[in-house]
Length: 271
Image 1: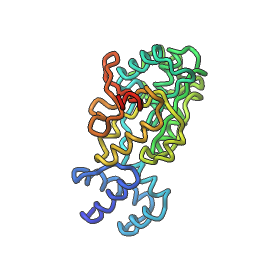
Image 2 (image 1 turned 135 degrees about the vertical axis):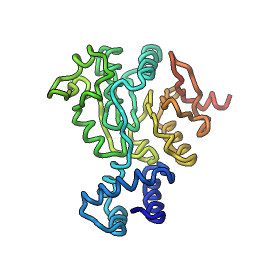
Image 3 (image 1 turned 30 degrees about the vertical axis):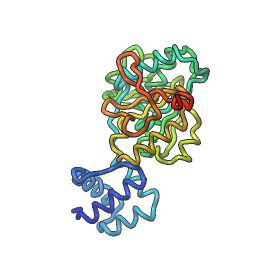
Image 4 (image 1 turned 90 degrees about the vertical axis):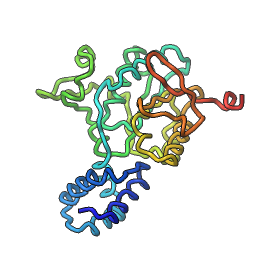
């Protein structure tokens, strides 16, 4: 279905709007998503479809939602949450503690962070969590806060009972004590103006995103994260990721059982 010319056009659109690189191995994946989207729109011509992507931002955002991977669940990579708990109790950043989750997908990560902070700080007014994603469909689900059995399967039962209401045989809704401490925004990590508009954060979770970027986009993303973090703030990355190739703005620090990246201040950098 997809000729090399059309595939190149589509992945150029993807890169320009997300920074994500799709190599030749992703052609079949993109082809399936395009076919599904075209059927939903009632379009039979690839030429017409690509034209719609270029002129209609809503159609483009729907396409981006379809090709964005959203593999997540509550308490995923628990060692990062454990490290966050440790740091929050020892660092003196002041209150409220501000945490960014980007990309936040369907909300499991930022809500997990909020649960941990609520346990550690014993006062929900002492923290704020912001979730950002480029996928508007994922954000819609995140704002609804209703999850199936797989999403909550790794959550300790006591937390499931404390922070969720069962609303169906296999559905749970997160309670307001957590939900109202998390705000969600649609945005792109490569958009410097948007990122600066979010404010400044003590802790940033940016997991399993940089691996999809090329070197140029990776450097831009890391620089944007640096700009919105307080001096000495901590960056959490996926286990297969590192900022070492992208920037010298962060130094690796071992916290509990994992490695996190601490923002290097100007004075430390000069030294």
